[in-house]
Length: 175
Image (cartoon, rainbow, N blue to C red; front, side, top):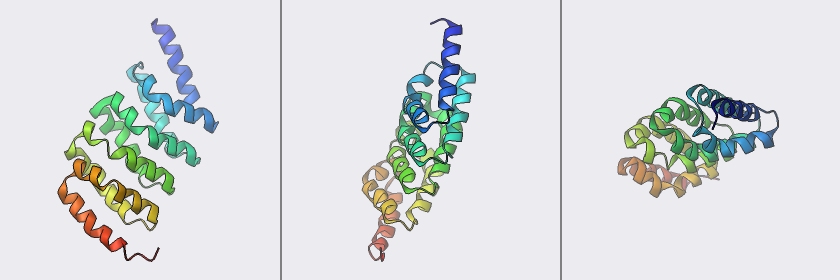
């Protein structure tokens, strides 16, 4: 593909990603992983900046779609860029006030060990998961419990043992 055409298409995609309409943003987010393969470093950085901005969008659906798309993006950009660019977005989104966003992200995070490795997950993601396990909403706790086996594979038995002990306390929860 001609370089000027590639640059033009990249610019158009980034403009659409920054569009004010939720449906346009969500469509772009859902396909960003496919586009990232063809971007130069400068345009890739612009996409990361847009994703970071969208992670704090006032629109819950936009944030949830971004959470659902994290793993596909990570598969394309690899370990180094994930640690530098995507992981900070994920960690911030794990503290999102909306439970749907957090739940969607947990589903994606359990897959990240394949790319990032257990050491990175344990040092960066585990503290945020511990914080989530203290959430007052039972749906968040339920989602963590559903993913205990996968979390155990990714984070090791020490994490699961500790989480299982805590989850037994949840049984006595009044909710």
